Every structure is written in structure tokens, then in C-alpha cells.
Image (cartoon, rainbow, N blue to C red; front, side):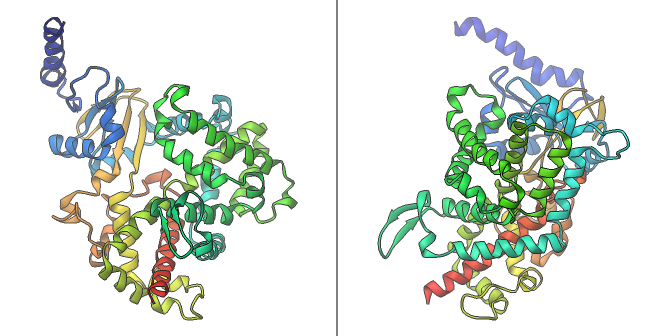
Length: 456
């Protein structure tokens, strides 16, 4: 059998990776793989970053291609070419990807059409208006100040002994508890964000909200893969439980949930004006809840991990943040001082963001387009693996692969460099980037202070 298959495989491999690039010189070259159709599917699941770095090593800054489950995708590895993608929003369109992701959350094509269609007499569609509203809530200003003060209050309240319970506790004793740092970070951050944006009534409607969200996050890697139902049972069950709570929450009169944030109130009103039926409203609200909570806790986990394994850095950050805690022993910090006068804290958070965040920009080629001297064919998708750009030694130095908490403190221009894209860019630059950074800095400072008093 192997003898019969070998000549066909060798012919395919020779054409695909040796002869075809000579014939079609104007098209991106493909990262070689051994199994037809499957391609780099397993690498995308288990080692995407390594795959993108391998591609960069092989092809440099030139656009290249990779096959995932039979689909050939373009990869744009350089900051210069990413900028070229941003300058072509119509021919290299982000909307198809958003619609595809919305469908994963259960939002129908009919609803998506409503969200993206511009109505007569209006200049922006529902999605564009919603993004503008997210910016109003999440960008610096009175609305962000209000939410971040609530976040700080909840984070401070949750970092206490009595709150250490549930899935985060691995061993429970009267005087000692063994706690999963990852689960603890997730529980504290997601709980604080839930309480800051939603009324407490959400917990009344879904008491096990946090546990269900943890399960969903653990299983969420399956979301884009279109796996059969038997392989996504936990994913679908946890989503259904959360959406059951959100459904009951939406059915409450606004007077029964007076502590909704401005963005939640506005989002619900806009969905009413759009004429969405209840189930679709629930799916939209779930998508917001998931996106809102998907990343910050992971950053917190990695920052605290670095601090725990680097006592000297921990002590330096403790000393730096001390003036922010001017009141009583357990007083809330001066947020302006934390954000503006603690360069090591800020630089440490940026370095962890650079090394651990996994943003990937996606576009769909609407018409044949040239990027970096290579022809991108209509109908294909392209990926911009921003994290691979974060390891560019020509930008971040010879030690780009290492953790250096002072990197952006010593070179302040790095945080605005075009190769540093932890939150994407262009029109779809993540509107939550300000609150994410501040929330992580608040958590790190409050945690460092708590460790100080515990150690005393």
C-alpha cells in the first residue's frame, strides 16, 4: 500500500513546494507540510506561535501561505505590510470575519445583515455605531473613570481570604489553602468585570455564572473548528447556562437592574431599536460578555507568575506603588498615581502583554490585491499574527524572546511602534485596550500590596 501511494505523494509534494513556486512567482510561497488537506492544522492548535515564527524564519518579511484543514490562508508577517492591509479596508475586508465569529455565537445571517446594513438617512450601520459606543465607554473620560473605580472596588474586595473558594481552591484548610493562580486570576477579574458592567441581578438569574464561564473558556479553543456535537458538549452546555441567565436578565424591567453600566444600557436599547428578537439579543449580549472577559485574567496570571518568580522585581514594584496607598492600611490606591507615576509597573505589564497576548488580525480578500509584491487571490483569508511581530529583534532588541520588565521603560517609543500590536489596529483597534491595561495595573498593584501585608 505504501509503495503504491509513495509515487503519488512525491509528485504532489514536488509540484506543491518546488515547481509551483517557480511557475507562480508572483504568489506567496507556502509553508511545506506532509499530509495533503490536513496541512498545519495540528500546529495551529498546539503551536501556532512556533509555526508563525518558522514561517518568518523561512520567508522573512514576505507574505506567505499556510494550509489549515484544506484551506490556504495568507500570512502577513511584517509591520510595513500590515499597514498596507490597513490602508485597503474595502478590498481587504474585516466584516466577513466578524460575521463568521458572530455565527459561532448563534447569531443568524439575517441578524448579522441587520447589524451591518446602513439604513436610509443614516451614515453608520449598527455595528459601526456600537463600536463608537464601546469607545465612549472604554476610552479615557468620565464613563471609563466611573467603571474603573467600580472595578478597583470589586478587585480589592475579592482579594480576601473568605473569597477563596470554589474551583480555584485545590486544597482547603483552616489556616492554609492551596489555590490555582490561573483560576484565582480568572475568578477575580471576571467577577469584578461582571459586577462593574452588570447589575447584581445577573447573579440572581445565573448563580453559577463564573463556573460556567470557566468551563466555556477552557473549551473555547474548539469554537472556530466546527467540531461535531459530541466533541463540544461542555462548550455548548456552559454557553446555554450563561445565556439562560442573560435571557432572564434581559426580561427584567430596567428599574430592576439600575446598576447597569452605560454601555449595557445603550447596547440593549440599540438592540430594541434594531428590532432583534429575544434569542438573538441574548446571543449578542453573550458575545459581548465573552469578548469583555476573554483576555485580562490571562495577563494578570502571567504578571503575577513573573512577580512570584522574581522577588526582586516584586520588591521594586512594591516600593514604586507605595505612595499610591496614602490612606489607611487597606485604603484604595490613587489611580492617577498608579497610571502616571509608576513606570516599572506599567513597563512590566506591557512586557507581559508583548510576550503572552495572542492577537491575530484577519481579513478576507475581496478582489485580487498585491501586498509586498505578492498577489493575494480573491476569496482567500489572510492572517496578521501580531505576536510574531513582537519577537522582531530589529525592533525589540537581541533579547526580544526574553522577559525584560524594563524594556518599554528604557525605550518609551516601543509602545507606539508599528511592530507592537497587542490590541490590533486601524478601524478595529480594540476599544477595550485602555480599560484592559488599567485593570491589569490595578490588580497587580493591589495584589503586590496584599502580599506585602501578608508577608508582614
